[in-house]
Image (cartoon, rainbow, N blue to C red; front, top):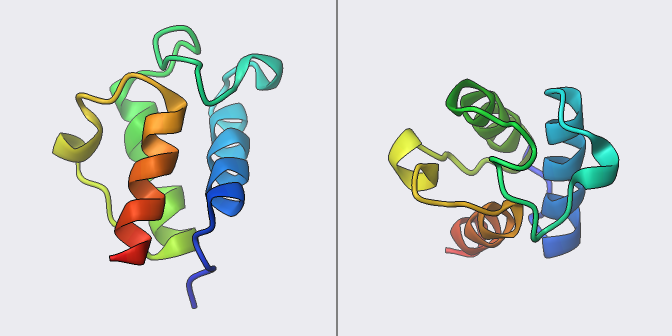
Length: 83
C-alpha cells in the first residue's frame, strides 16, 4: 500500500533516495539542481522507481527530463498523487 504523498513525506523520501544514489546529503535541498548533485539520467530512473514503490506515483523519463531542481520533482509527485 502506498504512503500518503504529503509534501514533507515526498521531500524526505527524495532527499534520502538521492543520498542513497551518491549525492552529498548536505547538498540536497529543494533548490539544488540535479547537475549540482551530479545526478544523471540513470539515477533519476532509480529515483523514479523508489517514488513509485513508496507513493504509487509512476514517473516516466519524459516527466522528469525537463525538471532541473529537486523541488520540482517533489511538487510533481505530490500533484500526481493528489490527482
